[in-house]
Amino acid sequence: MLVSMPLLTACDVGRELARSAMDIVRNPQTDVGKQVLGSSSYKRSKLKNLEFTCVKEQFPSLPQEADQLYRYALYHDFKNRWLPKPGVLDRYLPYYRIAAANGHWQANLTLQEILLKSKDINIETRERRGEGIYWNEKLMKILPASAHYWWSLYIDVGYGPKHGADDSIIYLRKAADLGNAKAQYEVGELLMKIQDDSSHSVRLKVTDKMRVCAINQIYPDAEAALMASVTESSEKNYKLALIYTHQGVKAGDDTSAHIAGKVFYSQNPNSRHKQWGITEDKERSRRYGIISDYLTRRAHLKPELNVHDLDEIVPLPPAKLPSWDGKIAIQRFEEGPAPAKPSDELVRRLAQQAGLDPNTGLPK
Image (cartoon, rainbow, N blue to C red; front, side, top):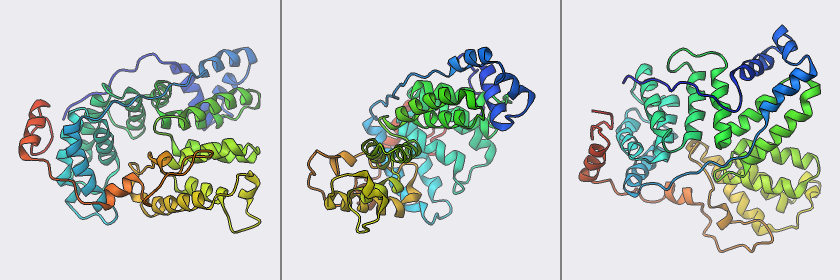
């Protein structure tokens, strides 16, 4: 499968700044690092390029017919993740591929994760590289922010043509500007690794904006939420820390769920979470605890693992608690009956309209 990565285009952080930032992070005491962080006027002009405006990534609705293929593949994929059996995942790749080719962005993201990271598929590295780039080109048309994030990953691992050391961060920053939560968090963390006291306040302000933006996305970033929660609690901003902790739970973070449970109730009279001053609520604590246990036991379901339905289970006060059957949505799916196998006719039709082989899900 012969594909090429798109040419780099201008973005909010220039190539020169990206190269300088990467050099400073790796070698802050080099001549280049001293030059970039040397004169205050030069520094201020560069730091202007760090300015950030929060954009939220927009996720289109999922095509219903393609979703049948995705859910069928994902269910069996989930069942195979804890103790993978040889050849099992390969059987479901065609369903992911055909769904992705028909505009199903979740199938596309899951497929790219598998191609990049899974050890349980019988595909050579060379073919993985080409196919991963192929699907990310498709993703560019429906989720450009996420696609730019994936370009940065592919450059990091050496996919595609030869790139400069700074190209990955250019794509990463562009992904952040377009609204990708993971990129927003990672760019912010990269900025804070620069060792320069005089620019610290400016970089911290940008990092905070990126972190908050990542937390308040439709699909929040777990690391950003947990980091922000820790920061705010250390500064005694407990109500804000609770909001960020709650967002971390939505993102599928078991640590955030555990903290939230302790904040609402702890049998330990000396628990540090009592300092948060949150009104005790044993039922809220119990629900967060149940969610935390599930997220811990099912960590192998990441990155799809999430609690997007959290506000329907344990909304933050003063909202009243609704009735709850003790399970989150992804748990009902994972523990429930297998979705019906898509009909051969549906698979053929979706494959044909995307120009794919229905047996493999690959281009004819």
